[in-house]
Amino acid sequence: MSARPVYSIVAPVYNEAGNLQRFCDEVALALDSTGESWELLLVDDGSTDGSKEIMLQLAAADSRLSVIGLARNFGHQIAVTAGVDYARGKAVILIDADLQDPPAVIPRLADKWKEGFQVVYAVRSERRGESFWKRFTAKLFYRMIHRITDIDIPVDTGDFRLMDEQVAQVLRQMREHHRFVRGMTSWVGFKQTGVEYVREQRAWGETKYPLRKMIAFALDAVTSFSFFPLQIMIYVSFILASASLVVGAIVSFLRLARGEEFFGGQATTIILLLLLSSFQLFFLFVIGQYVARTYNESRDRPLYVVASTAGLRRAQAPTQRMQVSAAFPHQAEEETRNDGV
Image (cartoon, one colour):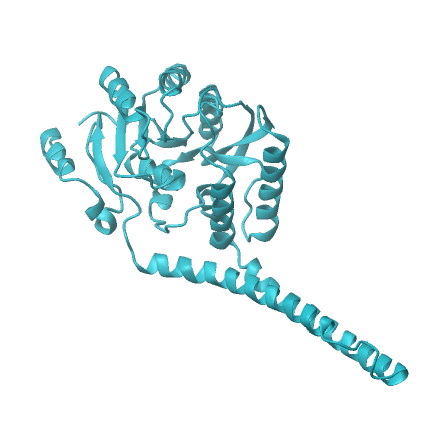
């Protein structure tokens, strides 16, 4: 069995064929500068543009690279989780393969880790090549999450971060399906700090987070770490109840003072009913989001299914093997026997 690496770099990949060669080269350059051992885990999240074939070629050329092929597109956060499950390093580094998060920042994260910090997150001081709308909504999202959640989730941070093995082990035990990894690493606690960097514009391809996915991601973040949407209902109900009492008193007074013809007709009633109905439907939607997530967790399905692996020094299943063993191919057992583990 090969020696355990100091660093495990986890990179989810979905249709990044044009970035992979450069990404792997820059990761190797950055990690080699540390003078310590490392491995790069490329998690293929159901790519359809030839990314998997490129990853396999890169892994065949460099023994430090490994490929974990998921059976379909499970989503970015699940792909990150799969990589963390397989990581063997004393520190686990999460980074996207689109080169917007520069691998050259990794040694700075490692330096903070060596100082004793167990989570080192990268803070975006600037976002290049993004539209005003993208920057505005991202800024609003991070500050909203920071305000309404019960934990301190740093603003302007993505998943680009380093985690000590102790933190990674805790993260492996958290098996919820609707995942917000940057919130989860904040929730675990430990000693944390940030490192500022400039987020570059995408070198090739297009964003994997269009508006629809961003909204779904925001819902996962809010419902995973806050009951604020449920708690706000009581305040809205008080406001509506108070408003109805005031309006009822005013209408009654004016009708007594000016006669029944004042406020005659059904228009006011219809408007008020539509307003109340819209609030009711909105809050039913909010409740439904929490109920649906509870139902999804109760099914206890595997978070992901691995179709194939390549280049792993030992074909280990995740730490939570007993919970998700059905998600791993039989070849893992065969490779384990071959490696003498």
